[in-house]
Length: 319
Image (tube, rainbow, N blue to C red):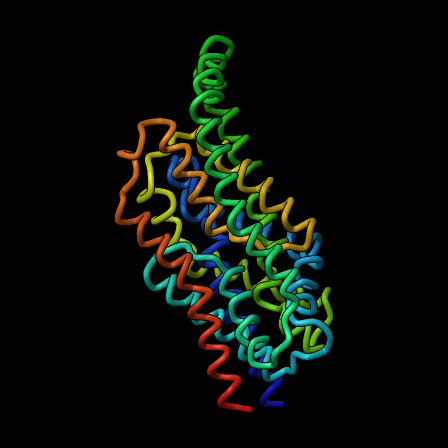
């Protein structure tokens, strides 16, 4: 009974921290563009994170639950340790108001468990790391090109063909659509980070895990998501509403594509990378607050290492 409660508590704690960190970062672009209030942003994140987890989250749950550590190696105790270790890493990021990667923390914790047992799917792990490297680079490049070439042309076209009121209405609708798509993609990809190890241990099935993961992401977005919105939306680069649309669309497509492949990727990297890319296209490197960017990059690198070390140490102590 106690172990079961600990398992549920670890998943809830992890999900809430994901909701406050990566899922909240999903609408940082629109919040920075002042197209949505903080309250509107977190409510939309909560709703669409749940939908994404339930409708499209099972492939990534399968990867984290049964892929990285093959077979039935993960025990319930190991699953609790992995989930808790990743949650602690994310909690540190939330305290520092830095959007770090829930996926990297979760994978790092699972790898720590796998190293202890001496069982890891190195090929799958290499594929995941490859996606981690490629996705922020792709987001930066696409956002830079969009900001450099598509954005000016779109602005000219809107000015020539639409009234000011029509432009505002169109932009508001597009931001709503793209922001909800990002939140949906976040739910599909990040719910696994909260419940994947528990599914791998056979404690819950994939469908139940998707529901629990989605609900806790939503709660986290509402309770603590506003802190990360402030960092992503206002402290990295100046964002206008049209640029925010490009950022959200690029992030959503990349993360959703990874989810369809069952790959847990770093939304907390993709969104800031896109913001940085479009900021560079607009005014060069001077648009960014270098201290904020440096702090984010440091946490990107250290979060999986911290989670992995905590998980490895804990499983060693209890075994």
